[in-house]
Length: 408
Image 1: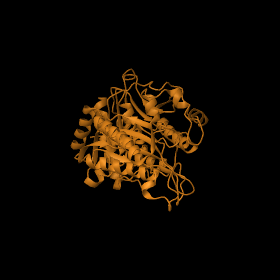
Image 2 (image 1 turned 60 degrees about the vertical axis):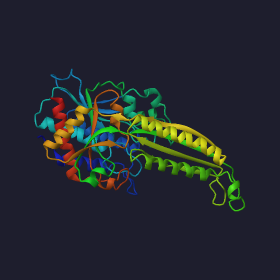
Image 3 (image 1 turned 90 degrees about the vertical axis):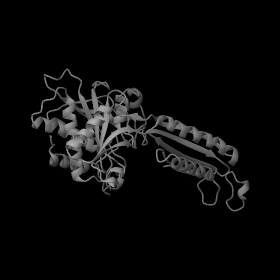
Image 4 (image 1 turned 45 degrees about the vertical axis):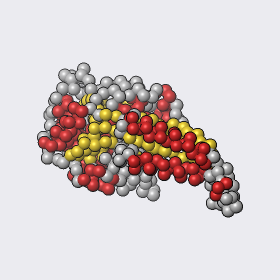
Protein backbone atom coordinates (compact mmCIF):
# COMPACT_ATOMS: atom_id res chain seq x y z
CA UNK A 1 0.00 0.00 0.00
CA UNK A 2 1.19 3.51 -0.81
CA UNK A 3 1.89 6.11 1.87
CA UNK A 4 2.00 9.88 1.69
CA UNK A 5 4.78 12.03 3.12
CA UNK A 6 3.19 12.38 6.54
CA UNK A 7 5.49 15.03 7.98
CA UNK A 8 5.16 17.27 4.93
CA UNK A 9 1.37 17.12 5.14
CA UNK A 10 1.39 17.90 8.85
CA UNK A 11 3.85 20.77 8.40
CA UNK A 12 1.64 22.33 5.73
CA UNK A 13 -1.52 22.00 7.83
CA UNK A 14 0.26 23.75 10.69
CA UNK A 15 1.78 26.40 8.43
CA UNK A 16 -1.52 27.23 6.74
CA UNK A 17 -3.12 27.23 10.18
CA UNK A 18 -0.90 30.16 11.20
CA UNK A 19 -2.33 32.37 8.46
CA UNK A 20 -5.18 34.58 9.59
CA UNK A 21 -4.49 34.54 13.33
CA UNK A 22 -5.15 38.00 14.81
CA UNK A 23 -3.70 39.73 17.85
CA UNK A 24 -6.21 37.94 20.09
CA UNK A 25 -5.22 34.52 18.77
CA UNK A 26 -8.39 34.02 16.73
CA UNK A 27 -8.01 32.39 13.30
CA UNK A 28 -10.29 33.84 10.60
CA UNK A 29 -9.92 33.65 6.81
CA UNK A 30 -13.21 34.94 5.41
CA UNK A 31 -13.71 34.46 1.67
CA UNK A 32 -11.80 36.96 -0.51
CA UNK A 33 -10.37 38.76 2.53
CA UNK A 34 -6.73 39.76 2.95
CA UNK A 35 -6.10 36.81 5.26
CA UNK A 36 -7.67 34.37 2.81
CA UNK A 37 -5.53 35.89 0.03
CA UNK A 38 -2.47 35.05 2.11
CA UNK A 39 -3.74 31.48 2.48
CA UNK A 40 -4.47 31.23 -1.25
CA UNK A 41 -1.01 32.55 -2.11
CA UNK A 42 0.59 29.90 0.09
CA UNK A 43 -1.45 27.05 -1.39
CA UNK A 44 -0.70 28.21 -4.94
CA UNK A 45 3.01 28.37 -4.09
CA UNK A 46 2.88 24.76 -2.88
CA UNK A 47 1.01 23.69 -6.03
CA UNK A 48 3.66 25.28 -8.21
CA UNK A 49 6.40 23.73 -6.08
CA UNK A 50 4.84 20.35 -6.95
CA UNK A 51 4.99 21.19 -10.65
CA UNK A 52 1.24 21.58 -11.05
CA UNK A 53 -0.41 23.81 -13.61
CA UNK A 54 -2.49 26.32 -11.64
CA UNK A 55 -5.79 27.63 -13.01
CA UNK A 56 -8.35 29.95 -11.43
CA UNK A 57 -11.94 30.30 -12.62
CA UNK A 58 -14.21 33.36 -12.57
CA UNK A 59 -15.57 32.62 -9.09
CA UNK A 60 -12.03 32.30 -7.70
CA UNK A 61 -11.85 28.51 -7.40
CA UNK A 62 -8.19 27.42 -7.55
CA UNK A 63 -7.12 24.22 -9.29
CA UNK A 64 -3.73 22.51 -9.32
CA UNK A 65 -3.55 20.17 -12.32
CA UNK A 66 -1.15 17.25 -12.78
CA UNK A 67 -1.26 15.84 -16.28
CA UNK A 68 1.13 14.17 -18.69
CA UNK A 69 1.36 13.95 -22.45
CA UNK A 70 -0.05 10.43 -22.31
CA UNK A 71 -3.11 11.18 -20.16
CA UNK A 72 -3.95 14.87 -20.73
CA UNK A 73 -6.88 14.07 -23.02
CA UNK A 74 -8.58 11.90 -20.38
CA UNK A 75 -11.16 13.19 -17.90
CA UNK A 76 -9.39 13.77 -14.56
CA UNK A 77 -10.08 12.71 -11.01
CA UNK A 78 -10.61 15.75 -8.82
CA UNK A 79 -9.89 16.10 -5.11
CA UNK A 80 -10.45 19.17 -3.01
CA UNK A 81 -12.20 21.21 -0.36
CA UNK A 82 -11.74 24.83 0.84
CA UNK A 83 -9.37 27.05 2.82
CA UNK A 84 -11.76 29.83 3.93
CA UNK A 85 -12.86 29.59 7.55
CA UNK A 86 -15.56 30.62 9.98
CA UNK A 87 -14.78 33.30 12.57
CA UNK A 88 -12.35 32.04 15.24
CA UNK A 89 -11.90 28.72 13.47
CA UNK A 90 -9.89 25.55 13.85
CA UNK A 91 -7.11 24.66 11.41
CA UNK A 92 -8.37 21.39 9.90
CA UNK A 93 -11.82 22.05 8.41
CA UNK A 94 -11.45 22.20 4.63
CA UNK A 95 -7.69 22.75 4.71
CA UNK A 96 -7.05 19.06 5.40
CA UNK A 97 -8.81 18.05 2.20
CA UNK A 98 -7.00 20.57 0.00
CA UNK A 99 -3.54 19.87 1.42
CA UNK A 100 -4.07 16.10 1.47
CA UNK A 101 -5.11 16.24 -2.20
CA UNK A 102 -1.91 18.12 -3.00
CA UNK A 103 0.07 15.61 -0.95
CA UNK A 104 -1.49 12.68 -2.81
CA UNK A 105 -0.31 14.12 -6.12
CA UNK A 106 3.17 14.93 -4.84
CA UNK A 107 3.62 11.51 -3.24
CA UNK A 108 2.49 9.73 -6.42
CA UNK A 109 4.99 11.78 -8.40
CA UNK A 110 7.83 10.97 -6.01
CA UNK A 111 6.97 7.26 -6.01
CA UNK A 112 6.88 7.33 -9.83
CA UNK A 113 3.28 6.12 -10.02
CA UNK A 114 1.88 6.73 -13.48
CA UNK A 115 -1.86 7.40 -13.61
CA UNK A 116 -4.07 6.83 -16.63
CA UNK A 117 -5.86 10.13 -16.12
CA UNK A 118 -4.89 13.56 -14.81
CA UNK A 119 -5.33 14.43 -11.14
CA UNK A 120 -6.64 17.79 -9.97
CA UNK A 121 -6.77 19.34 -6.51
CA UNK A 122 -9.20 22.21 -6.00
CA UNK A 123 -9.69 24.89 -3.35
CA UNK A 124 -13.26 26.16 -3.68
CA UNK A 125 -14.28 29.74 -2.93
CA UNK A 126 -16.52 30.69 0.01
CA UNK A 127 -17.49 27.29 1.36
CA UNK A 128 -18.27 28.67 4.81
CA UNK A 129 -20.49 31.56 3.71
CA UNK A 130 -19.66 33.84 6.66
CA UNK A 131 -19.04 36.88 4.44
CA UNK A 132 -21.10 36.07 1.34
CA UNK A 133 -24.23 33.92 1.10
CA UNK A 134 -24.88 31.15 0.17
CA UNK A 135 -22.24 28.87 1.60
CA UNK A 136 -20.55 26.26 -0.62
CA UNK A 137 -20.75 28.95 -3.29
CA UNK A 138 -17.65 28.12 -5.32
CA UNK A 139 -18.59 24.48 -5.82
CA UNK A 140 -22.26 25.39 -6.39
CA UNK A 141 -21.26 27.77 -9.19
CA UNK A 142 -18.80 25.20 -10.56
CA UNK A 143 -21.54 22.56 -10.72
CA UNK A 144 -23.92 24.93 -12.51
CA UNK A 145 -26.28 25.51 -9.60
CA UNK A 146 -25.74 29.28 -9.43
CA UNK A 147 -24.94 31.66 -12.28
CA UNK A 148 -21.42 33.05 -11.93
CA UNK A 149 -22.46 36.63 -12.75
CA UNK A 150 -25.13 36.48 -10.06
CA UNK A 151 -22.63 35.08 -7.56
CA UNK A 152 -20.00 37.72 -8.31
CA UNK A 153 -22.58 40.47 -7.70
CA UNK A 154 -23.49 39.23 -4.21
CA UNK A 155 -23.08 41.82 -1.47
CA UNK A 156 -21.40 40.62 1.71
CA UNK A 157 -22.30 41.28 5.32
CA UNK A 158 -19.66 44.05 5.30
CA UNK A 159 -21.11 45.75 2.20
CA UNK A 160 -18.40 44.52 -0.17
CA UNK A 161 -19.13 42.86 -3.52
CA UNK A 162 -17.61 39.42 -4.04
CA UNK A 163 -16.44 40.01 -7.61
CA UNK A 164 -14.72 43.25 -6.66
CA UNK A 165 -13.00 41.63 -3.71
CA UNK A 166 -11.76 38.68 -5.78
CA UNK A 167 -10.31 41.16 -8.27
CA UNK A 168 -8.73 43.19 -5.46
CA UNK A 169 -6.89 40.17 -4.05
CA UNK A 170 -5.86 38.90 -7.51
CA UNK A 171 -8.16 35.88 -7.77
CA UNK A 172 -10.87 36.95 -10.21
CA UNK A 173 -9.79 34.11 -12.51
CA UNK A 174 -9.83 33.56 -16.26
CA UNK A 175 -11.55 30.19 -16.66
CA UNK A 176 -15.25 29.46 -17.03
CA UNK A 177 -16.52 27.56 -13.96
CA UNK A 178 -16.89 23.90 -14.89
CA UNK A 179 -14.03 24.07 -17.41
CA UNK A 180 -12.65 20.80 -16.01
CA UNK A 181 -15.08 17.88 -16.39
CA UNK A 182 -14.03 15.36 -13.74
CA UNK A 183 -14.71 11.64 -13.99
CA UNK A 184 -14.93 11.55 -10.18
CA UNK A 185 -14.60 13.83 -7.17
CA UNK A 186 -13.38 12.71 -3.73
CA UNK A 187 -13.08 14.86 -0.62
CA UNK A 188 -11.14 13.99 2.52
CA UNK A 189 -12.45 15.80 5.59
CA UNK A 190 -12.53 15.77 9.35
CA UNK A 191 -15.90 14.46 10.55
CA UNK A 192 -16.88 17.66 12.43
CA UNK A 193 -19.01 15.42 14.65
CA UNK A 194 -18.44 12.94 17.49
CA UNK A 195 -19.34 9.55 15.99
CA UNK A 196 -15.94 8.25 14.88
CA UNK A 197 -14.22 9.57 17.99
CA UNK A 198 -16.79 8.13 20.40
CA UNK A 199 -16.86 4.75 18.64
CA UNK A 200 -13.06 4.58 18.30
CA UNK A 201 -13.21 4.15 14.50
CA UNK A 202 -10.46 5.42 12.19
CA UNK A 203 -12.19 5.91 8.83
CA UNK A 204 -15.66 6.99 7.77
CA UNK A 205 -16.83 5.96 4.31
CA UNK A 206 -19.39 8.70 3.70
CA UNK A 207 -22.30 7.27 1.73
CA UNK A 208 -24.72 10.21 1.86
CA UNK A 209 -25.20 13.78 3.00
CA UNK A 210 -28.17 15.29 4.75
CA UNK A 211 -30.66 17.54 3.02
CA UNK A 212 -30.68 21.04 4.46
CA UNK A 213 -33.59 23.45 4.89
CA UNK A 214 -33.04 26.92 6.35
CA UNK A 215 -35.91 29.30 7.07
CA UNK A 216 -36.20 32.71 8.67
CA UNK A 217 -39.41 33.07 10.66
CA UNK A 218 -40.92 36.37 11.75
CA UNK A 219 -43.65 36.41 14.41
CA UNK A 220 -45.53 39.62 15.17
CA UNK A 221 -47.26 40.13 18.49
CA UNK A 222 -48.18 43.18 20.57
CA UNK A 223 -45.77 45.01 22.87
CA UNK A 224 -47.23 45.64 26.30
CA UNK A 225 -46.26 46.06 29.94
CA UNK A 226 -44.70 42.94 31.45
CA UNK A 227 -46.23 43.55 34.86
CA UNK A 228 -49.73 44.84 34.16
CA UNK A 229 -50.83 42.68 31.22
CA UNK A 230 -52.58 39.46 32.33
CA UNK A 231 -51.16 36.31 30.74
CA UNK A 232 -54.41 35.42 29.00
CA UNK A 233 -54.55 38.85 27.35
CA UNK A 234 -51.06 38.82 25.87
CA UNK A 235 -50.06 38.47 22.22
CA UNK A 236 -46.51 37.36 22.97
CA UNK A 237 -44.19 36.92 20.00
CA UNK A 238 -41.43 35.63 22.29
CA UNK A 239 -43.58 32.87 23.71
CA UNK A 240 -44.69 31.84 20.22
CA UNK A 241 -41.06 31.63 19.10
CA UNK A 242 -40.24 29.42 22.07
CA UNK A 243 -43.12 27.12 21.14
CA UNK A 244 -41.73 26.73 17.62
CA UNK A 245 -38.32 25.82 18.98
CA UNK A 246 -39.70 23.18 21.34
CA UNK A 247 -42.03 21.86 18.62
CA UNK A 248 -39.04 21.20 16.35
CA UNK A 249 -37.14 19.49 19.17
CA UNK A 250 -40.13 17.20 19.69
CA UNK A 251 -40.12 16.39 15.98
CA UNK A 252 -36.44 15.46 16.23
CA UNK A 253 -37.10 13.19 19.21
CA UNK A 254 -39.93 11.47 17.33
CA UNK A 255 -37.72 10.84 14.28
CA UNK A 256 -35.47 8.31 15.99
CA UNK A 257 -32.48 10.56 15.55
CA UNK A 258 -32.69 11.06 11.77
CA UNK A 259 -33.95 14.66 11.93
CA UNK A 260 -31.96 17.45 13.54
CA UNK A 261 -33.23 21.00 13.98
CA UNK A 262 -31.53 24.11 15.32
CA UNK A 263 -32.49 27.70 16.07
CA UNK A 264 -29.14 29.44 15.90
CA UNK A 265 -30.24 33.07 15.67
CA UNK A 266 -33.07 34.94 17.42
CA UNK A 267 -33.93 38.59 18.04
CA UNK A 268 -36.79 40.23 19.91
CA UNK A 269 -38.30 43.68 19.58
CA UNK A 270 -38.28 45.95 21.46
CA UNK A 271 -35.84 43.69 23.33
CA UNK A 272 -36.52 45.18 26.74
CA UNK A 273 -36.66 43.20 29.97
CA UNK A 274 -40.01 44.58 31.03
CA UNK A 275 -41.82 44.63 27.66
CA UNK A 276 -43.70 41.74 26.06
CA UNK A 277 -42.02 41.14 22.68
CA UNK A 278 -43.87 42.62 19.71
CA UNK A 279 -41.69 40.77 17.24
CA UNK A 280 -39.49 37.67 17.17
CA UNK A 281 -37.24 36.96 14.21
CA UNK A 282 -35.35 33.67 14.26
CA UNK A 283 -33.99 30.91 12.04
CA UNK A 284 -34.78 27.23 11.85
CA UNK A 285 -32.21 24.83 10.37
CA UNK A 286 -33.72 21.39 9.65
CA UNK A 287 -31.76 18.44 8.24
CA UNK A 288 -32.53 14.86 7.27
CA UNK A 289 -30.74 12.44 4.91
CA UNK A 290 -34.07 11.39 3.33
CA UNK A 291 -35.81 13.87 1.03
CA UNK A 292 -39.34 12.64 1.78
CA UNK A 293 -38.75 12.91 5.51
CA UNK A 294 -37.23 16.36 5.14
CA UNK A 295 -40.30 17.49 3.19
CA UNK A 296 -42.48 16.00 5.93
CA UNK A 297 -40.63 18.05 8.56
CA UNK A 298 -41.05 21.22 6.50
CA UNK A 299 -44.77 20.52 6.09
CA UNK A 300 -45.18 19.77 9.81
CA UNK A 301 -43.52 23.09 10.68
CA UNK A 302 -45.72 25.00 8.21
CA UNK A 303 -48.86 23.40 9.65
CA UNK A 304 -47.77 24.20 13.20
CA UNK A 305 -47.15 27.86 12.32
CA UNK A 306 -50.71 28.15 10.99
CA UNK A 307 -52.01 26.54 14.18
CA UNK A 308 -49.93 28.95 16.27
CA UNK A 309 -51.39 31.96 14.48
CA UNK A 310 -54.84 30.84 15.56
CA UNK A 311 -54.05 29.82 19.14
CA UNK A 312 -51.68 32.66 20.03
CA UNK A 313 -53.27 35.40 17.85
CA UNK A 314 -49.88 36.25 16.28
CA UNK A 315 -48.97 36.96 12.66
CA UNK A 316 -46.29 34.75 11.12
CA UNK A 317 -44.31 35.03 7.89
CA UNK A 318 -41.48 32.81 6.64
CA UNK A 319 -38.60 33.11 4.18
CA UNK A 320 -36.73 30.16 2.70
CA UNK A 321 -33.01 30.91 2.94
CA UNK A 322 -31.38 27.66 1.81
CA UNK A 323 -32.74 24.39 0.44
CA UNK A 324 -30.47 21.53 -0.61
CA UNK A 325 -31.68 18.02 -1.29
CA UNK A 326 -29.96 15.04 0.35
CA UNK A 327 -27.08 13.58 -1.65
CA UNK A 328 -26.38 9.90 -2.25
CA UNK A 329 -22.68 9.38 -2.93
CA UNK A 330 -21.28 6.95 -5.51
CA UNK A 331 -21.47 3.35 -4.30
CA UNK A 332 -18.36 2.25 -6.21
CA UNK A 333 -16.18 4.88 -4.54
CA UNK A 334 -17.73 4.33 -1.11
CA UNK A 335 -17.07 0.60 -1.37
CA UNK A 336 -13.50 1.26 -2.48
CA UNK A 337 -12.90 3.42 0.61
CA UNK A 338 -14.11 0.53 2.78
CA UNK A 339 -11.98 -1.96 0.86
CA UNK A 340 -8.80 0.11 1.15
CA UNK A 341 -9.38 0.77 4.85
CA UNK A 342 -9.85 -2.97 5.44
CA UNK A 343 -6.67 -3.79 3.51
CA UNK A 344 -4.82 -1.30 5.71
CA UNK A 345 -6.35 -2.89 8.84
CA UNK A 346 -8.10 0.33 9.78
CA UNK A 347 -11.48 0.21 11.52
CA UNK A 348 -14.18 1.84 9.40
CA UNK A 349 -17.90 2.38 9.05
CA UNK A 350 -20.37 3.92 6.62
CA UNK A 351 -21.60 7.37 7.57
CA UNK A 352 -23.87 10.29 6.78
CA UNK A 353 -22.38 13.77 6.58
CA UNK A 354 -24.38 16.05 8.82
CA UNK A 355 -22.57 19.14 7.51
CA UNK A 356 -22.83 20.65 4.07
CA UNK A 357 -19.75 20.02 1.93
CA UNK A 358 -18.37 20.93 -1.49
CA UNK A 359 -18.76 17.24 -2.39
CA UNK A 360 -22.55 17.60 -2.33
CA UNK A 361 -22.33 20.16 -5.13
CA UNK A 362 -19.81 18.18 -7.15
CA UNK A 363 -22.09 15.14 -6.92
CA UNK A 364 -24.39 16.98 -9.32
CA UNK A 365 -21.88 16.61 -12.16
CA UNK A 366 -19.81 13.48 -11.44
CA UNK A 367 -19.59 10.39 -9.19
CA UNK A 368 -18.51 11.70 -5.79
CA UNK A 369 -17.80 10.55 -2.26
CA UNK A 370 -16.08 11.57 0.97
CA UNK A 371 -13.71 10.10 3.52
CA UNK A 372 -13.99 11.15 7.16
CA UNK A 373 -11.46 10.98 9.97
CA UNK A 374 -12.29 11.54 13.66
CA UNK A 375 -12.72 14.95 15.27
CA UNK A 376 -11.76 14.76 18.95
CA UNK A 377 -14.93 15.28 21.02
CA UNK A 378 -16.75 16.13 17.81
CA UNK A 379 -15.60 19.76 17.99
CA UNK A 380 -15.39 21.87 14.82
CA UNK A 381 -15.82 25.54 13.81
CA UNK A 382 -13.92 26.25 17.00
CA UNK A 383 -10.22 26.82 17.82
CA UNK A 384 -10.38 23.63 19.92
CA UNK A 385 -11.02 21.64 16.73
CA UNK A 386 -8.47 18.80 16.74
CA UNK A 387 -7.74 15.60 14.88
CA UNK A 388 -4.91 13.40 16.10
CA UNK A 389 -1.85 13.19 13.86
CA UNK A 390 -2.26 9.43 13.47
CA UNK A 391 -5.80 9.93 12.19
CA UNK A 392 -4.65 12.68 9.80
CA UNK A 393 -2.08 10.23 8.40
CA UNK A 394 -4.47 7.27 8.27
CA UNK A 395 -7.05 9.24 6.30
CA UNK A 396 -4.47 10.55 3.84
CA UNK A 397 -2.99 7.06 3.33
CA UNK A 398 -6.43 5.64 2.59
CA UNK A 399 -6.98 8.61 0.28
CA UNK A 400 -3.85 8.05 -1.84
CA UNK A 401 -4.65 4.38 -2.34
CA UNK A 402 -8.25 5.08 -3.32
CA UNK A 403 -7.06 7.71 -5.81
CA UNK A 404 -4.40 5.35 -7.19
CA UNK A 405 -6.97 2.58 -7.66
CA UNK A 406 -9.45 4.89 -9.41
CA UNK A 407 -6.76 6.49 -11.58
CA UNK A 408 -5.40 3.13 -12.72
